[in-house]
Image 1 (cartoon, rainbow, N blue to C red):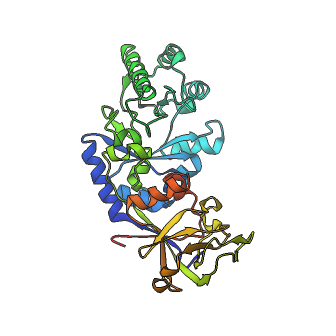
Image 2: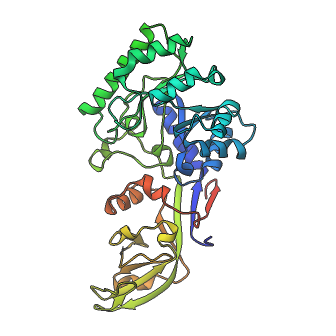
Length: 377
């Protein structure tokens, strides 16, 4: 565990982001995605704050284990938990959780649907159906829609608790053919259910990219993931057109453990990478053991108005950053060093440089980096 390398999570900013989202989607319910430990920010504290302070009633996770942790760590709290992929209907321990802990499984294949409808213990389990409208990952096939409807009706079910799909290309222009096609297919599926007398209680399409572009907002629910944590999810050339102006909820901060002058030609670190110029080498207390990847070599980071570059191999426990000589007057051992802060541009620029995405930057931070929570940190 680090002492001075920390991910500060500002809950005031999460609250502000939530209010901004509510203004974008008036009258819609928000299913807040908190999988992968709240996108690396800490699932339990975020759900606790989101439910008790913001009034969020529904949260989405990926696994039964995540759902189990929420119920165990936040006992007695009355919020819904949707499990989107790793469910295991036929494992006894998973079945017990579904039956007794008010955990809602998202059914995305015909085999699971048939099992749930045929198993007497699941007679009253709410039906949450996810259809594959073009993502081609998980989802019930629209080509089997008639068979699905007949099966549901034959088991005496009269309604679908939540009908959903997932856009494959919401980070691209929402007007592209793929997004339009998926939305059209989903509407046809809804209509077909209703024409056969099955009530659709809830429905959702819009993820962060769609929300940023005011698309697919006519359903009862929206499912924000990345945007509530702050960043835009659109590709760079579309970001200026985004309707989202949230702030980054977290600030990744470490500190400087060494500063020294280097000369052109000096070998630096593992692999003895040759220094291309005279300058100042800054060593920070963050490495791939903390989730700061070796792929970040060459990325630029700013410190007190000076631009430096991640230089040579990122180590397990530390990273070298090369600055020009004039930066020496402003750099001191022991001072804090920010990787990102609450400004969107900083983390988006860093993710663009490193050919990654903010999702990955957040999620890959290891448990060695403490998460610290507060208001107006």
